[in-house]
Image (cartoon, rainbow, N blue to C red; front, side, top):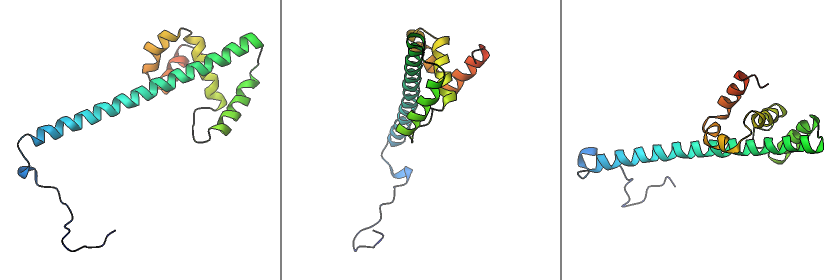
Length: 134
């Protein structure tokens, strides 16, 4: 690596003027496609995360209602999730409470999937606060 070898020339890109006809258009279209696909990936990841949060919130809420689990379960769950997934954020007690409240505000999974999951999580929190769900 970094050594010069006889007969090997470091490849330098050709000047745009030396490229075949249509290259500039080809490159522009390819660049736009990459940007578009990256955006789709980010939006898809956001939707998946919001749906995961909704399912976690629903599970917590159902257990609290059916088995009488109290508020301390949130703190315990937060601790255990952080220990199990130290490299993933999003599981402090405060956020788990918001995750549960999100389900209270949006109990219909279909509505969440079609509408709410299209917004970033921070926008969902802002919406919950504006709705008076604390």
